[in-house]
Amino acid sequence: MGKIGLVSVKYIVHAQIEADGVIDKPDVIGAIFGQTEGLLGTDLELRELQRSGRIGRIEVNVETRGGKTRGEIIIPSSLDKAETSIIGAALEIIQRIGPCNSKIKVINIEDIRVSKRNFVVDRAKQLLKHMMDTVVPDSQELSDEVAYSVRVMEIREYGKDRLAAGPNIDDNDEIIVTEGRADVLNLLKHGIKNAIALNGTSVPQTIIDLCKKKIVTAFVDGDRGGDLIIRELTKVAEIDYVSRAPDGKEVEEITKKEIHKALRGRTAIEQAKLDLERNGHHIERSKDYRSRSHSHNRAAQTRSAQRPPILVKTTKPTEQEKKMFKQLLDDLIGTRGAYLLDEKLSILGKVPITELMATMKSLNSGIYAVIFDGVVERDIAQAAERSNVKHLVAMDTKVRAADAKLSILTSKDF
Image (cartoon, rainbow, N blue to C red):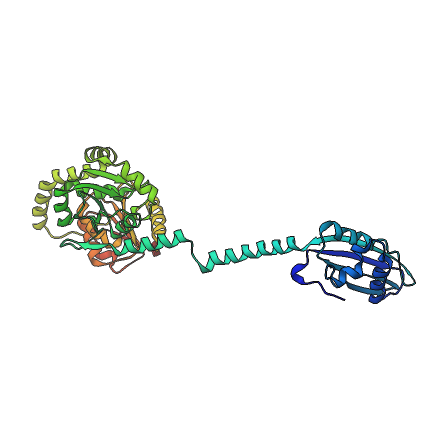
């Protein structure tokens, strides 16, 4: 008998068979051909259809249990839908196979093209997912990655102070002054190439000189540390505008949308100064107090030189202060950062440890406590003493509490 090619199969007839006795596969096939012969006319004669390859090899799978036979019949077809349905219906007229009563029921006629199409779709989804996850990145991702790499490569060192800067500092009439290198990198990432970093809270001469020639926008973090930067800049440099990152965020971490929104919403330096005066009275008062008491301190120093030295008593923190110090110290674990607090335990600013001494020196007074993720060294303790800091809180210390003129607390004290 002829076989139907797999590529030409359109439909598959699936039928179930039940017989009240023991029958074999040849019995079933013989019954199918014998009992349908002449039933459907010459055009749908099963033997002729099989010889011409329009009906494939009939598969029969049966098993006998308890004296009864059950199984399935599979007939592949390249006929059209109507002709295949007629062949399927013809199977159900068979009521006896060999000596046994039987029943054949067509379960379904499978459209093999739909099955293949579903397989193609499902497999295509799997391949696409695998490709997106592990093989080929999206073209936009490639563009973004290349653009970011190129922009990062554009960062350079500018001036005698070797400040981190974008490539367009000299070519642009306006520049943006940020706190650190990471801020410049983030701006470069989003296409802003005229930014330059202070590299600390003290203002380098390179920035002072640029501010005389350029229109300058100070782009600072949205916290008290940003206020400190603005104060230092306005003391020695000619700043025109101030932009701030959203509250609680740093310039180095904000998105492109947040960057452009902050730059569009920049304020004139005069307005920024007024805002600082309204929000930062305690710092200004501490400076006034220092100037008023300068002559008194000199007189006191003269008198103290005539007397034997006395033991300086350090200020012990209250339980409420210790609780606050512990909480802030826990927040700093792993950040290598430092908090500066005033007498009301309000945070004046947050700075990297590398800039802590310069920040204390620039403020000189008004700092009540310093909490930082590091170890108290002799130079840090001395800088804190010179700035009239009362409490120095760190992870550990190399300075004995008895040798310092301020309270030193470590994580072991909480």
